[in-house]
Image 1 (cartoon, rainbow, N blue to C red):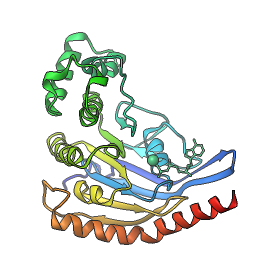
Image 2 (cartoon, rainbow, N blue to C red):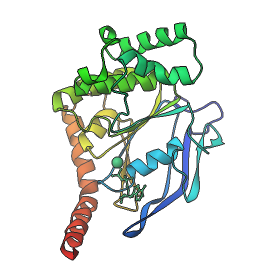
Image 3 (cartoon, rainbow, N blue to C red):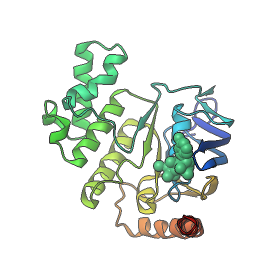
Length: 271
Ligand SMILES: Nc1ncnc2c1ncn2[C@@H]1O[C@H](COP(=O)(O)OP(=O)(O)O)[C@@H](O)[C@H]1O
Ligand SMILES: [Mg+2]
C-alpha cells in the first residue's frame, strides 16, 4: 500500500513519550504521554497552542533531546541521538550570516565528508529546487526573509534526509512570501517523497500543507485529535476547503487556547 514501508511498519513511532523540564519556576511538565506514528512519505502537521510542547516533541524526534519516559522508533530502530536521516529546520534557521549561500548549503555536506565536486553539484541542484539558482555567491545578510528560508530549506534537503522536521519555519514571514513557500514546499514534497513532520500554531497553514493534521492539547501536550486531509493538491491558503478545515481545527483547539490565556493572566496577577 502507498506510504507503508515494505514490512508494514510506520516510518516513525513515538510511543508513550513524556518530558519534564526543571527551571527556576520549578518543574514543568512539557509533554505527554504522547503517541503517534508517521508513514513513509506522509506530510503530517502538528498544531497546538503556544507552549504546548511542539518544539520539545520535534527535538525529541530529532534526537536532540531525550524523552524521560517512552521511546521514539525511526526505521525500526530507537532514536538515541541526532542523525543525517532526520534533519531539523529550526525556527531561527541557524544560517551562518558570514558565509555565502553556497557555503551555508555545503557546510553539512563538508562535515559529512563529501568531496568538493559532489558538494557543488548538490548545492546547485537544491538551489535550483528552491528557485535561488543565481544567488550562490550572495551573503545571507543580503537576502530577504523568504530567501533565507529557502536557503535553510535547500541546506536541509542537500543532506538528503529521510525525514524533514520543521519547526514553525514560516512564522516570521509576511503573508505573500509564506503563500509562495507553501506552494514550493508542496511541490518539493511531491517531487522528493520526503516524510515531513511540520509543527505550527497556524491552523490554516496546517490545513494547507498536511496529509494529516494532529492537534495537541495545552501543556503537557498530548495528542488531541487527528484529521485526515483529502483536499486535492496543490492547495492554497485561501481555498474554501482549506478554510473549512482550518475552522474545524480552530474549534478543536479553542478550549486549549482559552485555557492557556487564562493561565497566563492568572500568573501575571500573581506577580
Ligand atoms: N530547556 C527547557 N528548560 C525548561 N523549560 C523548557 C525548556 N524547553 C521548553 N520548556 C518549557 O516546556 C514547555 C513547552 O515548550 P515548547 O516545546 O517550546 O512549546 P511550543 O513549541 O509548543 O511553544 C514550555 O512551558 C517551555 O517553557
Ligand atoms: Mg515552539
